[in-house]
Length: 242
Image (cartoon, rainbow, N blue to C red; front, side):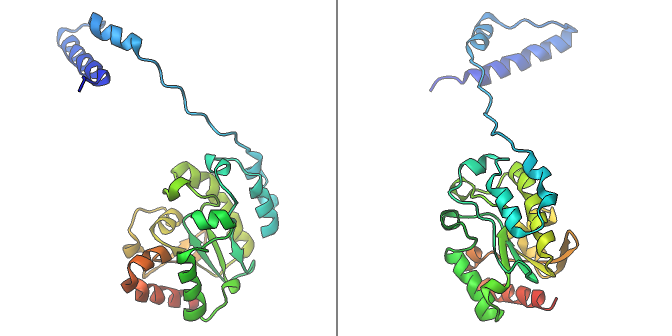
């Protein structure tokens, strides 16, 4: 296995700088071998930046209804996810819902159908709403922090959250819910701007832009850990009291 030229260059450069510092020299000359390797290294091309439609964010305040906001988002290309999605996953449910569920980001099924929480985890969420809370799914509102699916369902990047969260804020301003239920670690940490675990965040009240917020486990987590369904039930019961 050959020597990594980058590591060799760094090692020799550090040695030269240390020796130069000892001797009080300001100018350091690389050895011919290292200088040749440096010259042979081709600079990496910069990553292409997606075109940004800044007017999308500028027009947010002009959206007075969810339909207007969704139409605006259809033309959004603020980040790379816009060019990768199959369908925008804006949200669904009662536009005047008292309770809003907020998840992390769309998955494969959601990306294909353009609706939030439609896979196995979505069916469990529907059961929680209809069988547990005794509400119809269309009585509440369900959406995600991100409106486009990250590739391979990876965690959203900080820049993607920064660009997409204003749309969620406007969504909630239009709906005016009485309470938010954040589903899962990532959604809760994003909304509450914290790195605390979901285990520490659940069981107490928080606020997001002045709206009472309850954090609980994501339905996908509950499919793998059914023993925690009882804790989730306790969380949604508290949300129902608002």
